Amino acid sequence: MNTVAVVGSSVAGWRAAQELREQGFDGRLVIVGAESHRPYDRPPLSKEFLAGTLQPEELALGSEQEEADLAAEWRLGSPAARLDAKRGVVVLADGSEIRADGVVLATGSTRLSLPGIADAPGGHRLRTLDDALALRAEIRAGARVVVVGGGLIGAEIASTCRSLGAEVTLVDAQHLPLARTLGIELAPLCFAQHEDYGVRVRCGTPAARVLTDDRVTGVELADGRVIPADSVVVEVGAVPATQWLRGSGLKIRDGVVTDSGCVTSLPNVVAVGDIARYQPAHRSHTVRSDHWSTAMNQPPVAVRNLLAGRTVASYTGVPHFWSQQYGSTLQFAGYAGPKDKITVVDGSLKARRFVATYQRAGRTIALCAMNSPKQFAVHRRRLITSLSAPAPTIPHRR
Image (tube, rainbow, N blue to C red):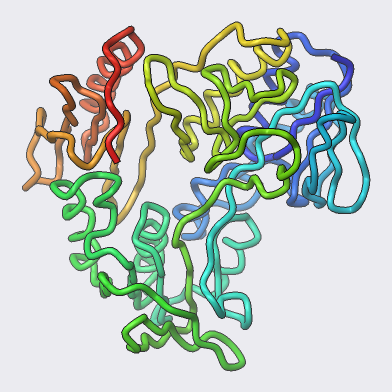
């Protein structure tokens, strides 16, 4: 290959660019990014950065020397608009084209929204550094903040805003946020923290729209209730950023479908991070993981296969994530489903310090821990060993 284009400049794209050089690619390397910023770390945006304890320069994924070592051509501020696989061209929104022999897809995901959120000041979706800066400028003691969405990021935003003295209301369509992620036995522990720290919770009724005048004034729920607000943050989920790939010939199904090595139906195109729906080793179904750890760990395998021109290695990483809310640390690893049996194997739920396993067909397939990082690390090593070994297929349960 003479030219490789990495489309996406967040953590998955950054790691892919590094891996290309580390694995011996010495040709033209082009990195495409929708934002004007060089690669930066996103997880702190809802926590330390929003709280003001980190500054923009501290989020940088690479040093000046590391960026220089890449010897890359940066095409920032204009997102990819189309992939013309037949011509081997990535077309950008500004009309320019990049001819490439190989392409790494790393465009991540796009946040969903609510009607009215973009119509006036005070409406926010926390996806980028600029989003976080705008929200950070508004959070102060006494400010009325409504967070729509009780998932992990929404919970972190609510926690951070409350720590800054804001009057926070959390809205979610589900009666028990995070139940789909953690299960109905463990989700209440996270849910309870909101009320423990003075966050008002309005769950079980979806938000219909954001109300505005000259700026945001509140959130209207589906039952007609109105929650006044000075600022509204919408975190109702995200979808993989695949719209620009329509007509490319790639298989799209809640992400770009790949094999176990992150290789798409085109051997010179690989996908990593949020956008990749891949086939895990020893699994009968494809999965998509939108966690930071997957974006960090997939590129070495994907790049190896890209440079080989075929799949010579499979990605065997086990998805895991962590979250920090109200001074507590939540950690999770594995592949859990709503009908899995949950067993506490260390600590206690009452103390909110525990490690729990998820069992399916007599086999541990996932872990969850709260405020037990050392114990979680021990159990996670065992889980990775178990899930990485050949085993009978575990049926997928929705």
